[in-house]
Length: 82
Image 1 (spheres, helix red, strand yellow):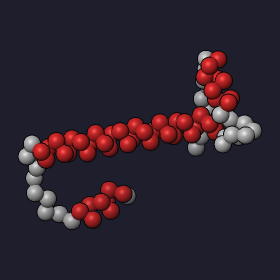
Image 2: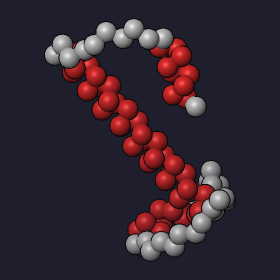
Image 3: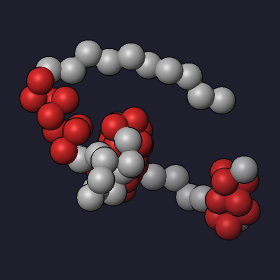
Image 4: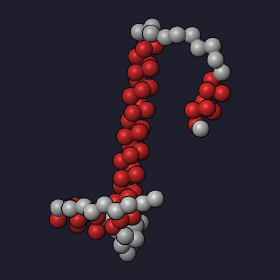
C-alpha cells in the first residue's frame, strides 16, 4: 500500500532534487529520487543501530559480562529471520 506525502522544499533542495531526477539521471521522477533517498537513510539508521549493538556486545565481552550459550546458534538465527 502506498500513500502520498506533500513536502515543502527550499529552493536549494528543490534544485537538488530536480538535478538528480529526469532525463540523464538514474531517476525518472523526483518522487523516485526522494523515495530512494528515504530508503538509503532508513538503511543507514538500521546499520548504525546494528553497529551500536555489536560495539555494546564487544564492550560486554571485554568487561567479562558474558554468559555461556548452550543452544544451537544456527537454529536461533533461522528463527530470527522469520
